[in-house]
Image (cartoon, rainbow, N blue to C red; front, side):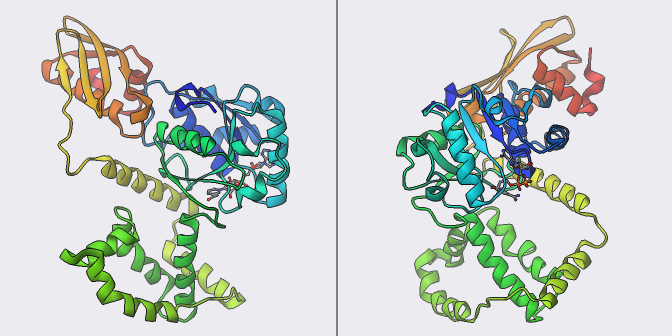
Length: 404
Ligand SMILES: NC(=O)c1ccc[n+]([C@@H]2O[C@H](COP(=O)([O-])OP(=O)(O)OC[C@H]3O[C@@H](n4cnc5c(N)ncnc54)[C@H](O)[C@@H]3O)[C@@H](O)[C@H]2O)c1
């Protein structure tokens, strides 16, 4: 298997909602991406989706490629040529994926991992027709993958531990939050948790306990806020006060069991469908799906930035090494730098570098902001010579007055 640092070329198979989002993320991490999708007119749609995702990326690394660098191939064989890692995002149908994996497996050298974004299929089934099933696994992202950090990595019965290790390392190296499942279950973890909660939410709506909007608010204005920070177990550990989980279990396991016994198992009747559709329409208050998605993504970006900020540990400080023309930040032993040359009152930014392992933390942006503040404080103008700094000025027109 390839080590994460050796992976430079990724193939993305299927350019729908999930494939296009993965492609944008891979490009922003400096990986060469070939996307393959046989649907007529797919290339134009994929490029539009990637351009849209690009506007909402939490971070574009200094060595990022651009959406224009994406190679598109309608043909699967050409799409996979030279790939060192494959992320598959074709339709969620078991028989279809079994056949697609068989074809990809025959086309790719055995050391190339084939990861499926499948939301809930079992890899044991998907890999069943492959000659090299040991390199096949699930790398399930959460929509949209360019924003939500989680990837669930789970193998089938014939997936090798080496492939699991390599996939975990790859996803972590590109800044994802990868978790490893020890066994396969339909829907993996996150979708099962969502399913459990939504089952009860629809039951409560069907029983007329409250409006759809109020049932949603019971999460988004309540425990949902805490769940973005700590999961359900840790949340209840805190719920136990000083006594932690033990105290919580002593006092709340029994009532919790009574609630569990009373939970519903709704059936999708015509009435329930109408209730849910009318309920979310009322909750949207005239906002279109596109407007709601924009609102979600903008707030997600703010939330991710907030979560990336360390709380307990003191924050490493940016050092200005004026004698060599460098701003430097050392995090967990990794050196991040912004280099410049200065002549009179002009600062030329020549290089910005952040190791891939620190991707997704906004470090290049932080260094650039610091450099621009220093320039402003000293009355210097700035010439953004490296591509990251040039792109930064484009994304931040509020600094246009600094341009030399
Ligand atoms: N949508 C989500 O919220 C979500 C979240 C996580 C994971 N997933 C998983 O990601 C996968 C894709 O889901 P999606 O929502 O992007 O679906 P989608 O329908 O938006 O996209 C599927 C794409 O696959 C293409 N395709 C069809 N046959 C193909 C082939 N032989 N080779 C390559 N491409 C082919 C289609 O043309 C289409 O563009 C599914 O396995 C799904 O379970 C979806």
